[in-house]
Image 1 (cartoon, helix red, strand yellow):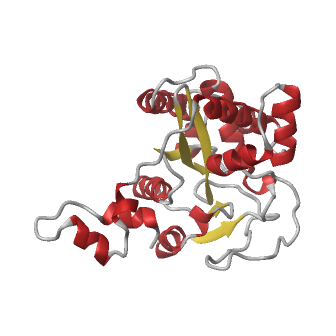
Image 2 (image 1 turned 45 degrees about the vertical axis):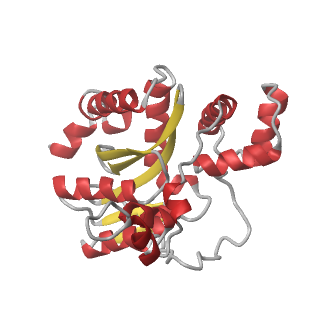
Length: 276
């Protein structure tokens, strides 16, 4: 059980003291009370610049992004900071890497099931991913579940951490609202390879498919969605707070599903295709 999961289990209990609950969970009380410090204004500005450039050049690794920030934009930044911000934002350069066949020692990696598969109906394949969402005074993470055939966004959630729980909530919401898919595709992020996430899919008799590591095209539909969300909404209307971001996304996804025509769908909307 992760530290974050243990922290969520600890609560004020009429019979069991906080000290005893922490002891039972093998959780130090200092860890339970710890509140992470927010990022500085300078780091938030760097993260915003990194996010925008990464949308244009997802093959930029830490060194290339460092060069871009320092020599093109003039920021006084070092490699160590850029590397930490990449981890904070959940980013990784999309390019071939050595030891691609080396699996996670803890989590099972499932094969990619969609190579050369014709996607010709709704609920054949669903997919999900996570992206960084900057605000004027902070940031959140966004996850969404999308139907491949119709491009329809079936559910989405915001979180202030990269914990797996908000990804699971999004999938549960989609499963409770729509017919389940035959295949569910994700990347090899730790959230999606966790037993909690894959177990939810397997319990619903859904086949699990995972991208090849470093292969952008394997989950291209979600990557295109992130570009649309950021260029059509986020970069034009920088939200001041989490509430404003939530309300803006609520309106955006409504328009995306029901009003925004897609050229790849014959200029019909995702909802027209999904619900026809």
